[in-house]
Image (cartoon, rainbow, N blue to C red):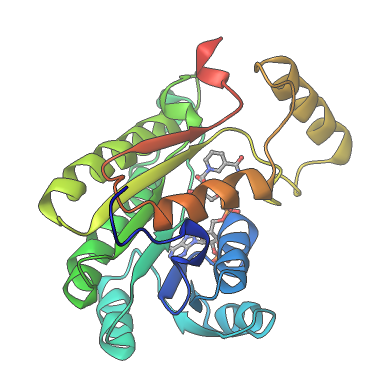
Length: 246
Ligand SMILES: NC(=O)c1ccc[n+]([C@@H]2O[C@H](COP(=O)([O-])OP(=O)(O)OC[C@H]3O[C@@H](n4cnc5c(N)ncnc54)[C@H](OP(=O)(O)O)[C@@H]3O)[C@@H](O)[C@H]2O)c1
């Protein structure tokens, strides 16, 4: 047995975890769970008010304004924070329409939120992170299960996965990983009419091997593991109930 083994459960204690997109849904749950694991949490959101409101609900947390489509806001946040251990980014701006209806600016915004934003976070935050630090990006099952009308979601999610493997080499020894969620009852679907949402979730459950939709815990469990899994880098971890297998 090698010396110096650290318990994964304790690995986040005392570290600083920035969660960009941390004011709601999956990001907020990862922020909460990181704080429970003993991390100092920084909630990043486009609105300072949302960031502060979310941070106020979490022990040992503060808010910061970051819009991943605005490089100046990323640079300002890095300058203000001066040092962080882990950066998680859940930002997304989907443009789910058939190709015939694509709008150039919305395609660009989708790539900015999911792909270019994380690259700019890497540019500005890697220099203030220790060798033991990590980035956690968010891909999604649409990349591996293409559907008509969801091409931009699929392509941007696929690019996130390649970003994780490429950045893992370029930013080494800082680790870079991605989670690819399946359909998660994260809150993001709450705007659907209740009957439509139930039918959608029932269809998702019938269509994957574990026969249910994902939960915030499913994603937060994987996220906390990846933040502390010191020998895992460049990976995409699929948390989607086996959806790609069927
Ligand atoms: N939930 C699912 O079923 C599912 C499935 C596959 C993949 N995913 C991926 O998993 C990630 C998290 O999912 P979710 O359900 O929590 O998504 P969500 O409800 O859309 O939350 C995304 C978060 O990102 C923030 N955000 C959006 N644009 C931003 C920007 N330009 N700069 C900074 N923050 C920005 C949002 O904040 P504000 O809007 O409040 O500013 C929000 O907090 C996303 O990348 C999503 O694509 C989710």
